[in-house]
Length: 150
Image (cartoon, rainbow, N blue to C red):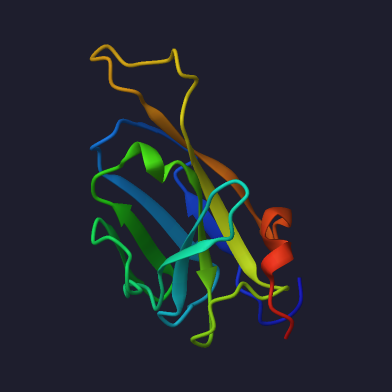
């Protein structure tokens, strides 16, 4: 790791949720991110979608059930009412400017929200989803194809 890089660790490692539930994902930085934290959703075969930037700002068109908060080293992303369409990978990303393409050397942590097999259900019959850690690492391979040269 080169000097000045911030390592991000994202939790929880595992959390079972049902549609309509509230989901909270935490992102801890190894040193202060100064409020410059973004959250992305990544679905298979699609480019990452920016959900939150500057810790708590939602870009135009992002539903208000997605929210973010935090400062310094501790940040939180919340989905107030999970929908089946929310299945995907969720990433926190420290950014130093208002350019939200992931830098090629960016530090990023990820959590995956995935749907279970179709026949899996909870006792009430509603499908469940599981939230589990993908990694906490440097430049994850799924995102390198959209990185921004610096």
